[in-house]
Length: 430
Ligand code: COA
Image: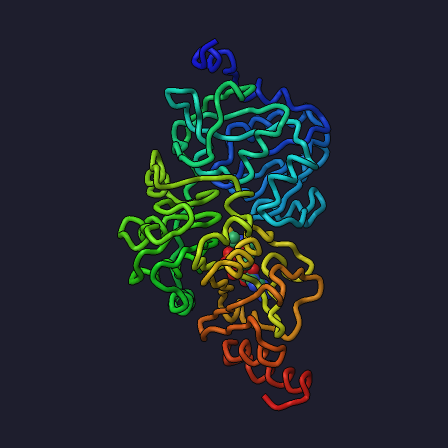
């Protein structure tokens, strides 16, 4: 059968497709803006047909209705990253958090979960019958590949991206056609504090650096601060509209990259139509699974790799908390440690943790991390910590030197208190 006929033979409605999920199954959802919305809606619509279906879903950008209390007998949520629509379910015991480095996630599916069903979104096929995972290759492609049943929502709005991002129609079990624009994630309006952090981080960057940037206001502020640099490269877990601005201005041109030269390498993308149009059919963008992009042994092969990630709290030893507030899990490790380690191992690399010095009147630089909080980036891994007040370089520094450097970039309102803790702890004057 040629692939066109195979395509037709696999076409079903979303409600028919999700009948192949059985009670007790392990089901993986594609995530972020690549979430297969039509399929997830059908799963929730048919909730009465299932009991105890375990759902693996990372960055949840949609409604996540399967997390609602009324479905607690039908679905259980297992994730390595919590978001606004899933936090409550985890806090209330309708799911749980699995601590993992993001680069380990594909192998977790291959060797431990062995999913029964994968639901994911793809671009329409090209003339050879290959569809692209588009904006979300990350764990989605490897988990789909190792699932017993593969169900794809094919959406004409999903960009056709290159890299290790393809699957052939013959490898799919069921196809649901559903066209809908991808979820838009708009850039944030930057505050003066975020702009100052961006400037401080940018002062650590050099022409020719290769960038990894997380998501949110701080990465956006850093990108805004880099517009006077030259010949930057991208090897990053994800990127958004801010990077497109620099690519279009030629500030990021990937010319000096020694690894994948001339190419922007990423694992998933989140932004607006501007981003999705930029990456569509663009051979300079390589989208690859996260066990390639984020594996520190791979990413560190980029010389001058500079990683920038945000956090919740840093203690005076330099222990970084990024995914919990006390006992409350708020997000996940994501790719933070993958890239801190990659940047530390990269020739000429620098890893940066950047954060506002305070949140809601509370200092983020603290004598001790909150009870119940988990260390995300260890004191052995941390290198630079940046706030709006400056830069603390911690690598190779003693405990006293670290504490002094961190207090110097804390909010002025909290420095006296931190100095008094320092003097008691280290039996010396500040
Ligand atoms: N004490 C109490 N509350 C705190 C806090 C602290 N020390 N630090 C942050 N918060 C609160 C904020 O006030 C905010 O509350 P709100 O939602 O009620 O407004 C909330 O926690 C989120 O903080 P904010 O600074 O707005 O978060 P963000 O959207 O910039 O995300 C991280 C910051 C650290 C949560 C996020 O970057 C993350 O999850 N990082 C880990 C994974 C990672 O680095 N991935 C990158 C690779 S792509």
